Image: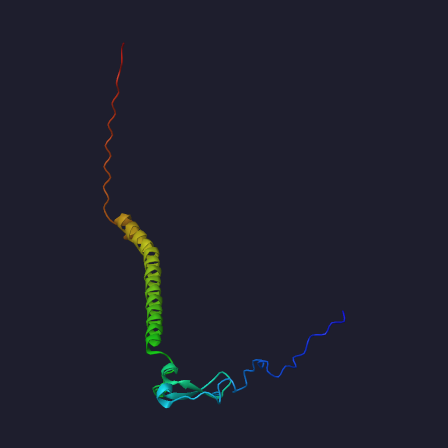
Length: 157
């Protein structure tokens, strides 16, 4: 250290240091005379440390009103609007799945019908084009007409 110590206050007339826990700051001085008509109404309010302190009524905060009682009836487990959304989503999904399944069945049936139908159409066409005697075992009358036109041109020139 440099040999200097802080000076201690030993003067009894000096102002006391600020002490937030002290109520002497709010106490009226004994020499002051205060008339009730000059003072106005005073209310006691809690300060930051939980003690009750006097305060002029016109500066006091407004009293807090008690809150309204809450409705404590039990609520449904799921919100009704959320239930509607879930139902619409499930119903829409089921509808889409049903439509997709139905379209798939129709397409597969059309594919099966077209493959089978081509075979039956081919059988019917072959049956209609087959000569009658081949169906009846060679019996029947068949007339073959041949017409031949032979034309020869001669160029002498």
